[in-house]
Length: 394
Image 1: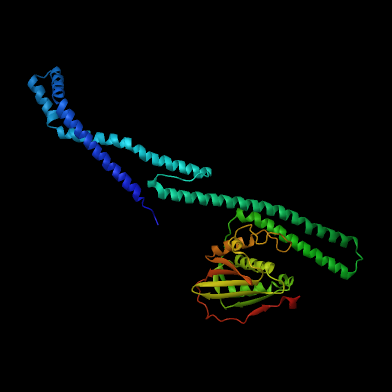
Image 2 (image 1 turned 180 degrees about the vertical axis):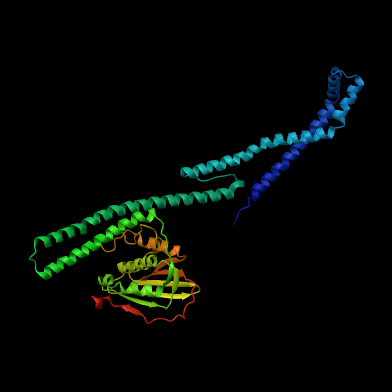
């Protein structure tokens, strides 16, 4: 709600009225006691002598005095009052300039990042509150930027260190395969598979480097088209069996048909892929990840649920910040750049949607809400849950 500074208005109005009263009082005193009193005869005689020296006779000089001063007395009184009022107003305007100086000093404190509190006169209290709020926001953003930069530097160091492990392993296994051409086929296949896994991990780390550098250097640009989220989610689950099989996990999809949106298929696929990978990384072994999608009221809601340890509320509030990771300890499987969820949030919001997370002792849920495309849809029909039995496809 906009503040109208009523106290400041009343103060300025009161001072203006007091100035007018003071100017009238002083002017009346000068007119009564000086002009019409003590100085009347002497001033008149002085002016008559001036006129006679200019060549007028006595009678004409007195008549000229009456024409100029006596008959125009009210004009001189008004003019004198205006001059007095402006004089007193000029003196009192110093208080107004003090307001501006106080505001300027407060802004200087904000710009310099001073810890001193913002204190203004009572008339400017609403402005002081807004400035204090602005100061806190700037300090908070500066702190967040510093923390983000520090996390970014730490992650670059960590990733650079982590690159050595798979790279060393790839080099060692390839050297061994090259130096032993007569190695049994079964053993060769084993080492080839290990080398491939290390190379894939190396690729993931390099991609994380690219994510870190690209996140702040360019904005995400959407290339929208008509898209069926039902099909996209099922394809995503179907392609995840290799990733989920590492932890003996399964994925079930329960979505309505023809959930149409106007969106960027590649970017939305990245969102859901990030959510699925996050669910797999932090879910318990041998559990199921459930993907649900429903439409209604012009929006589509997609929910990813995994069974895993509870995320504390404090960490849950920060989970979509860039370079933030839920687990403090890094590992080769869950240690990422902390950008997946931050990028997912940015993409969802660019689509006019929202993303949030909840967690309890049994499971964690990521909820995505996206506006529908406005295209007329078929009557929603719930599909039979589609299960991706990753173990059977190994």
